[in-house]
Amino acid sequence: MYDLPRKFHVGMMGRRYSKESGPVTMENLPPWPARAGVRRQHSVEYWLMASLLYDGKGGEEREAVRVSDPATADAFFVPFFSSMSVTTHGHNMTDAATEGDRRLQVELLEILRQSKYYQRSGGRDHVIPMTHPNAFRFLREQLNASILIIVDFGRYPRTMATLSKDVVSPYVHVVKSFTDDDPLDPYENRTTLLFFRGNTVRKDEGKIRVKLAKILTGNNDVRYEKSVATPSNIKTSTKGMRLSKFCLHPAGDTPSSCRLFDAIVSHCVPVIVSDKIEFPFEDEIDYTKFSIFFSMKEALEPGYLVNQLRQFPKDRWVEMWKRLKQVSHHYEFQYPPKEEDAVYMIWRQVKHKLPGAQLAVHRNRRLKIPDWWRRKK
Image (tube, rainbow, N blue to C red; front, top):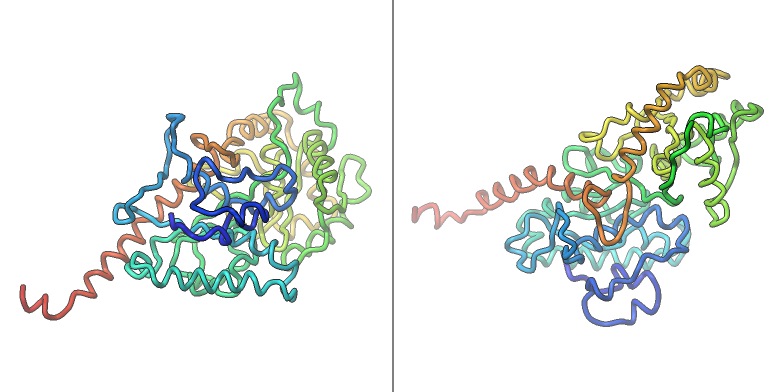
């Protein structure tokens, strides 16, 4: 892991942390703020960095550990909080304060290009988190060789991000996990058929939310409510998901959204409306075991989606509910990290991508062999 100045990471978490000197360690790592609200959904970068600072004295297995000698590293983590930088430096793309985000990106690129390890691989064995849709938006295409940690491919051209080299991460859920979900009859205990609460004005595929509002409003067993992510509204959503059999997941500004992972940790069966969504850990987790899928066309047919859910067999729903309880720990971000949690799973996905990166490193070495060495041999 690169030892970057604090302004690239924890310095954005508060003035107090930006003024401290010296490297960030397990002892002085700032805790993630409990009142961060919706900003928490893009905090993957924080939890990955924290996991590498953790010394592992708890004895648990880990997929990634930090080494002191870079020559022995299999991969290089770049702890730039690119998503936090988006929300810290300006509130929209035209805000003058976004210049601070751009300067950090320029400085980071200079640091990387001066690194012999980055030069050695062209960045292919470097791991860079970019989970906000606008993370690293000014210069991201200059990092397209690296292993990117993203939540979906909605804002990335195929020339930059692909499943063959990049890792799809979950959003960090913002509702509290349902840890005591053990009613005698979970199906009957959840009195709402279908629940959605969120912003209905979105871009791209997310425009479907307005259309769904017109179709679903008026059904007595459906709650489809317009809302913004304030602390009080997050609490309302937490309660609503826990009392619902199904939770609707239409696209947001990009194909995925935090709502899917809020539903998973609430054990509310996700109803996914999308024609082009990618899921985290899909090589290990079968989402059809606990989710229901509808195409955009099916969802927009009046009455079709709701009628399908009303006819959904109770025993199948209970099996999905049980499966959600079994897999929800894979979507937990926490410190200290725990075996098989979200960070553990992400690092395992990175490990799967490394053979391709290491092949590129070896080829570069071979192609750079000077002519005098060949003649000598």
